[in-house]
Length: 447
Length: 188
Image (cartoon, rainbow over all chains, first blue to last red; front, side, top):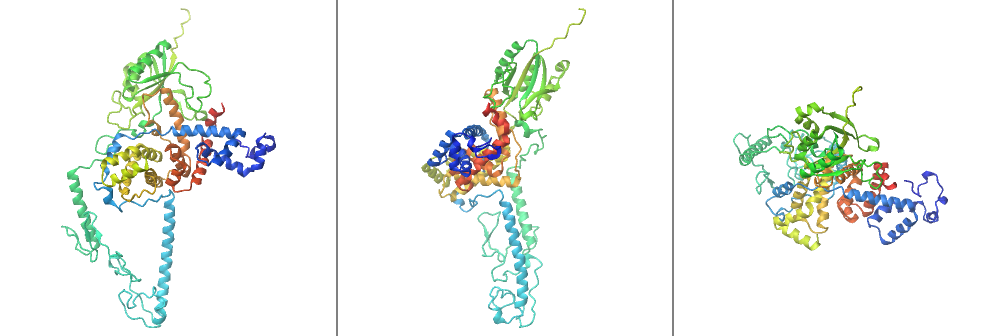
């Protein structure tokens, strides 16, 4: 759509009628701004003055009027999209997952309510990288300055309280000897393991468990265990107390016991399809994503078949409609239909009756499955290619196979029991039937 | 839900009234589920996400001070979970999943209208899913969840003007994505 503000079409403003003088006064930036306001105008989200300006502009500008019409239509259609309703089981699941404690007793357990950006991961990564880089630089500077400071006189080093570190009295670190001016004193060697590290850092603050808070045993709600010195929960088979391996083994041991208790109380059920040993159903994920089944039915009497099929759909607690538009598009609903196809029916029946419907249809005449072409011109779905045709002779012999083929992809694997045990199978199946007069064989010449 | 009722409801839930939480579910379960379904594209993940959201709501109600409307607060929690889901999945253009429309289908409705809606929905769904995440969020919250610009701004923590411009740009992009298909009905 070309807007008066866009000069890409090469037309002159003076050729555009009465609104050109208005735009000459308003200027192109104002014009573009008005265009950006059209959606907010439709939504009633503009202040009164701005609304008046836009309304005045719409009286003059046909293209903006058209855009508003389009925006309104698209908005209406978009709002119609979300009709999904959660399954009743979800509510029960939510209620069952709630903790026993009321929220008032759970203060502090919830996450802070700040909106996370979808790109937050990247920012966090960048921030982490920056902190890591600073840490490396800081460690290098500390090592360098520590080496230099240890060669300085004590009075000079006292002016750097933070860097007055290793080996100085009162720093909290174990002293390795009093530094002498001009004499290099190496610091303590790096600990082999974190567990062997001293409990105080160079700044005099505790290195582990900084505030000496009691550490909670995750398996014992309400229990608090002081970490200094770390007590060890003794269990048979666990490592000796005091080592981190022993603590881990104790935790592992405790976890195994709790798991066994939980299993004894309520056996684990694998929620995945087939997770508990039974055969996993095929194509479950596409069960509800199936397009309508498109069929072509060649019959002797089209009018009689049309009536029979409609009554058949109603008998099956379904519905039927004649003459669906050639292009099933609400966008084109306003446009006149080029050809009214009275021989095409759209049927909607419960999924568990789909096989029976197909069986009844096959008794009426030659039934063919038609596959839509999703890549048709302009994306419009058209049905033209017959991808499967069941010979008339085979219909009586292997009807179930035919129905299975027809319904494949709709998760209706077996006729008669299409959705048993499959909560994701569709509740209904849409079938379009194109009725065609059966071609009679040409009479043999000479007869 | 009126502000007074909201305060009363929150107070009852904080005191441990399960019935009150069920009332909250009555009011917000479907909306949160639809939002989750929009982000996940499949029913099972949407249900998991909805459950997580309401669990977080239940735990967070202890700290709810009523600075914002309860609905906005719940939507912010839901958006946090949805954004986290999207961050993990890294899907910029979600493939169309007809479950979104078919899950809501009522088999008793008129077949022609149903077929109409199915095709139209697929078109618009595809276009919406191909919007950038920022644009898609405002379209989902405003058009599908029926929130005002103010509520969308509060939920996404952005200025109202940003919501307005994003929505306008999103609809322009939708028009481009739908192309001549969408304009056919207008011009005819």
